[in-house]
Image (cartoon, rainbow, N blue to C red):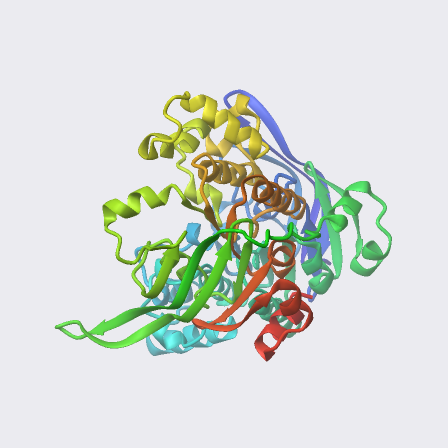
Length: 525
């Protein structure tokens, strides 16, 4: 008997009289010690299928078919039985940790809550177990992180906390929904290895949901490829990768960023430069809040980016990549030189900096989190136009329509809200919001990490087209080395605040000088 059996699962949602079929006749089995991967793009029904296993879809969902765990039917089971199974026997790791972690509670409190609820462990025993879990998932200096709140951790660190919470109760079935999307390549490799080890030692079943076929090849025993709510192809991993029968599977395997950016013009203007930039955050303790130490987020960073040039900044979570970019944009305090188009901006007042903001824009990792759900697409894109008085003689909607066309969006959809767009479209809205101001420097902070592989390729092509057209300077922050290679002219490799290596992208990838860079490239496969 299989540990988890899904037979002819059908899920539909009814809203405002409209019925949407999300899952249509899905069937698969998961045995102990086995990893089954559900693969497909956003909207294919992967996550809905997983949430159906323990009835986590809410009242608007209509679920039909059969889901059995250890021979017991989960569809239609009473709430008491479902509560026993959830988190204890079947545990989840979700894609976006900030939606799952409580911003008001420390990491220790949130992990302790799970241990107390499911295992009755408290006090020092709980603390020891928490430290063990945090060590397992690769959180450095876990004792110092116990009292931290989620917003004080990097994206990768938050995801590791989520994984620790899911593993705390030693579940029979672990459902991992894009668990490594936000992680750098070395930690991703560690987490995948950890999950594989746990699967073997605990004789656990692992249902792995992802859009990344590269990961699937490394972790899965069986693969189910989903499209539009259906499994279009399934089979053992090696057989499927050796011979794909369905055009959609072939399309997914072919989707990988490639090529290189256009060469930089020899006399291109220098847009931004830093000299020995340093960002240290004080650690204060005691009644008088005296500074006892510093978090050395960035040490001695010297970079230069010209018009039409991309500087790729790579490194593990907490290496200082985003901190470096925020310091350049004068959004956090720093020491050392910062010049923008020849001007020393360190001494600029807040009023002087305001006119600089138009020329320095940023696109964040999670477009859904950075776009206001209460504003239409047009309002989001146009927000900066009146503040910076961009092209005041043209109607804002005309400028919005132009920005939408340039970023591959249909201007006819400008009055829709963010939740009505796909993930890739939302990222295009975020890029359009920045581009409508005609910036000279664009900071791209993990702009493709949460996107499907096919959409990643589209966004990379879009960014290269915009750079070619407007001579944009990019700071491209990412842990995905394949995307970085396709985008970057120069590379900076960071580790724990230090610049470990920098140089031409080709040189860094083909002839890495440090062991750390070699480890990053090897982990990326």
